[in-house]
Image (cartoon, rainbow, N blue to C red):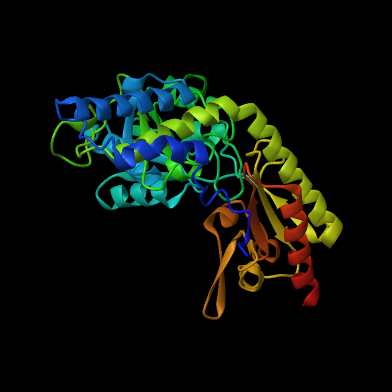
Length: 378
């Protein structure tokens, strides 16, 4: 039997509609978009149609979308590409303590190579305080990169306030939106961001494809050099199969956003209620913001357990993530939970549940029964 899957923040299955849209490009429509003949023209049309679908999802113009190999490349292109191109204006970067490694590690590498880095702390809910951002800005600050939604606890950052501060100082703002796209409304103009990263496999599209939004008038240095693909911004023959998949996934996400949100919230709340009934509210601690969070994410500390040990017992039955990891004779708490100052007694017992479009109440009941039985055995 397949495990009950409650780890949609880690990755999502390819939606059937997406797979169906991709299928012709696996077999028959295999042309190179750079070719001038009909096969090439068909491929080029598919890429540009997908570009518009992605742009429409986030309120952008198609010319502002660059296809990438995923969220990590998009983050690298945004952060490194912007900073290296504009370092003559300054070499100071601001980010937050709860960023994904695909942003934090890029910033740290830039720091090792002559840039200066300020990492903002977060409050116990995982949010950056806008006053802290204002205080961190210097005359040589050139980029601020703060994620939209946290992958571990689901907390949403107050991006409108943060980007307003950046704009008042004339500083470019990048956000990693890998977790928020398709779960909540994301509009680049409403948010006020200049650069935004998308990861296809978080969006029911394939792994290995993503996109970077670059606002018109914002320029980033290429990571690679070659021919003039992606309007000269990302060389290499386009991955048409997966680009078509990302486009279709974007269209489906836009079409079904409201219904999906309602389903995700209802499943998340049902999961929490079932866990309360099974284990008692006194044994549970919700990590993250109580309202400003993703509709599908429940980061939950369970008192008296070590999450990695529980996962070892149930990983063939239920797929979830832990907030800590075991290394030899020690337990390592996630950097996000540390930044939020979650007490170790709760952090070491933290589980991240993330429900998806296909999650059912029956699956949740069964998962809670399995978790309860293992915990109560100890």
